[in-house]
Length: 421
Image (tube, rainbow, N blue to C red; front, side):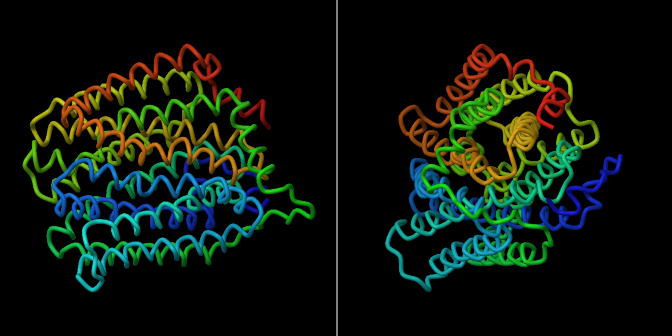
């Protein structure tokens, strides 16, 4: 462990922020999120402007999640066995390639018929994103002592959701004011800043393993750990199905143009609203970390997320729709902090890369699969029914999880920390 991670922690709400390496890690995180989210909002506007088809918006998610699924297990293995800072810097450098590629397409410098080249660029992002989360989660435990994990996870969620707020807002404004090539170019700049952050970190890397297990056996070891841990598996499954079935944000370009009748600035507001709510609750949880009844609060939060999706689907007023998305972010923020804390407290250091990759398969990929699901359901049922049905399906998932995972329902973070120490 690093010196920061082994030193006695300070009894202060701001203690994690006094740690230089943790601040740099947060800078890495927000820069990667800003880059990715600016590309996401810009490419959604780009594709819908070319096609006018909400199903094509769903294909953006599919183009990203397929390579993500293929790469994630190997990314976790590499994070556990290679220098994490250098691997993170290389991933961020590759992250910059996608917006530069898309900027060339949008500016007409690179000839592209239809949307095939756009989807190819997004596929590259899918491969790169498989490394970003595992690198962050592995370095998280090298920068903070264990008793700061709960507050550190809350601060990490604030930064993550802050990127989700500002990224779409900046992207939407830049598209409307300066055009798509400029929005893509700024996204590339943020990716390069993340490279610099990774190279400036000073943490002790784990000692190299003299005898490494075969790659597939090592990946299987991580999978067995997750599937044998009811708390971790229950939290991951709950989040995955809720986002997959209840997530409607991928359809925001269609809602903006066909139902709410706003421009790209409105799209940025809708994309940012959930993250703004999550930032607010993240600040609250950083000051008052969850301890007792954390499992019950998690279940109620995901149920609230489903209700908000139903409200968003039925709304025909722009600011009412934005309010439902804002409130959905509050509930989702509780879920994110709780799941992140469970993962950090439960995972051995030598398995953090692999467990984080599995977490990404459950949670990170559910956004893209959910986008494809939402686009397909919108084509079959229409925009509004697709979102409303997804919200009700989320409520069913919560009820099933509460029944099947009693340990999650009774979760108390104090007991988990004491048991795993």
